[in-house]
Image (cartoon, rainbow, N blue to C red; front, top):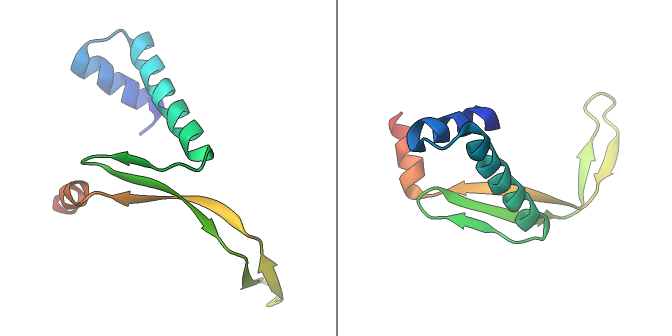
Length: 92
Protein backbone atom coordinates (compact mmCIF):
# COMPACT_ATOMS: atom_id res chain seq x y z
CA UNK A 1 0.00 0.00 0.00
CA UNK A 2 1.28 3.46 -0.89
CA UNK A 3 0.49 6.98 0.27
CA UNK A 4 -1.68 7.37 -2.83
CA UNK A 5 -3.64 4.25 -1.83
CA UNK A 6 -4.20 5.69 1.65
CA UNK A 7 -5.43 8.96 0.14
CA UNK A 8 -7.82 6.98 -2.09
CA UNK A 9 -9.22 5.17 0.97
CA UNK A 10 -9.80 8.51 2.73
CA UNK A 11 -11.48 9.80 -0.42
CA UNK A 12 -13.76 6.73 -0.57
CA UNK A 13 -14.66 6.65 3.16
CA UNK A 14 -15.04 10.34 3.95
CA UNK A 15 -15.69 11.81 0.54
CA UNK A 16 -13.03 14.51 0.70
CA UNK A 17 -11.60 15.63 -2.63
CA UNK A 18 -8.54 13.59 -3.62
CA UNK A 19 -6.26 16.66 -3.37
CA UNK A 20 -7.33 17.23 0.24
CA UNK A 21 -7.03 13.54 1.11
CA UNK A 22 -3.51 13.49 -0.36
CA UNK A 23 -2.61 16.65 1.61
CA UNK A 24 -3.85 15.03 4.83
CA UNK A 25 -1.73 11.91 4.27
CA UNK A 26 1.35 14.00 3.38
CA UNK A 27 0.88 16.24 6.43
CA UNK A 28 0.46 13.24 8.73
CA UNK A 29 3.64 11.54 7.52
CA UNK A 30 5.64 14.78 7.52
CA UNK A 31 4.56 15.43 11.11
CA UNK A 32 5.50 11.90 12.14
CA UNK A 33 8.93 12.22 10.48
CA UNK A 34 9.59 15.53 12.23
CA UNK A 35 8.55 14.23 15.64
CA UNK A 36 10.65 11.06 15.31
CA UNK A 37 13.68 13.00 14.01
CA UNK A 38 13.53 15.10 17.19
CA UNK A 39 13.86 11.89 19.22
CA UNK A 40 10.28 11.81 20.49
CA UNK A 41 8.01 8.75 20.47
CA UNK A 42 4.58 8.59 18.87
CA UNK A 43 1.83 6.62 20.60
CA UNK A 44 -1.38 5.99 18.65
CA UNK A 45 -3.98 4.36 20.87
CA UNK A 46 -5.34 1.14 19.39
CA UNK A 47 -2.55 1.02 16.79
CA UNK A 48 0.88 1.09 18.41
CA UNK A 49 3.94 3.08 19.39
CA UNK A 50 6.83 4.33 17.27
CA UNK A 51 9.96 4.55 19.43
CA UNK A 52 13.34 6.14 18.74
CA UNK A 53 16.16 4.01 20.17
CA UNK A 54 19.91 4.40 20.28
CA UNK A 55 21.88 1.28 19.41
CA UNK A 56 25.38 1.18 20.79
CA UNK A 57 28.55 0.33 18.93
CA UNK A 58 29.04 -3.39 18.46
CA UNK A 59 31.28 -5.94 16.83
CA UNK A 60 30.27 -7.38 13.50
CA UNK A 61 31.69 -9.61 10.82
CA UNK A 62 31.87 -9.23 7.05
CA UNK A 63 30.07 -12.39 5.86
CA UNK A 64 32.05 -12.47 2.63
CA UNK A 65 35.56 -12.21 4.08
CA UNK A 66 35.00 -13.15 7.72
CA UNK A 67 36.84 -9.98 8.74
CA UNK A 68 35.77 -8.47 12.09
CA UNK A 69 34.66 -4.86 12.10
CA UNK A 70 32.98 -2.33 14.36
CA UNK A 71 29.41 -1.34 13.60
CA UNK A 72 28.99 2.31 14.56
CA UNK A 73 26.48 3.63 17.07
CA UNK A 74 23.21 4.61 15.41
CA UNK A 75 19.64 5.72 16.02
CA UNK A 76 16.76 3.53 14.82
CA UNK A 77 12.98 3.73 14.80
CA UNK A 78 11.06 0.72 16.08
CA UNK A 79 7.35 -0.04 16.09
CA UNK A 80 5.54 -1.86 18.87
CA UNK A 81 1.94 -2.76 17.94
CA UNK A 82 -0.84 -2.39 20.49
CA UNK A 83 -2.53 -5.52 21.79
CA UNK A 84 -5.73 -4.71 19.85
CA UNK A 85 -3.82 -4.24 16.59
CA UNK A 86 -1.74 -7.36 17.19
CA UNK A 87 -4.81 -9.53 17.79
CA UNK A 88 -6.55 -8.09 14.71
CA UNK A 89 -3.55 -8.98 12.51
CA UNK A 90 -3.26 -12.45 14.03
CA UNK A 91 -6.92 -13.20 13.25
CA UNK A 92 -6.24 -12.35 9.62
